[in-house]
Length: 157
Image 1 (cartoon, helix red, strand yellow):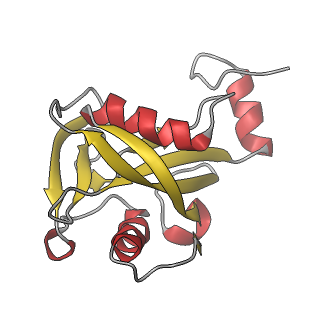
Image 2 (tube, rainbow, N blue to C red):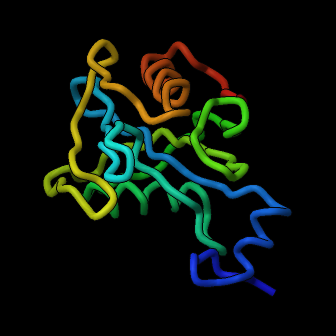
């Protein structure tokens, strides 16, 4: 039996007490080696585009879907950068979340825009990364390291 993870479903509380959530982020870089970040509407801080993997969805597909939903980016997941446990990376959530970050190749960035979940976006070099949402510092650092060839294996935090 599958339970949808929606706020109006009473089973959500039960599911979150027995199993961690899974989220997927998209680490996409432009031709100038800058990472795409979004400013979250809920806390005003910057993050990789991403969100919760839906029931029946492949995590890599979720990363691509979330990038499109949040900022209009069309991308293709090409590698798993790493797996990050919310309990050890400082993510600000009452739930146990396993974050998967995918290196994504940009296929179309011509229609970038904000959404209901974001109020800004931008491409940032490593030395210009703005204040990040809790838990994203290690994910963004590893994304740069992977993109620059400094991270040759998956990161597990």
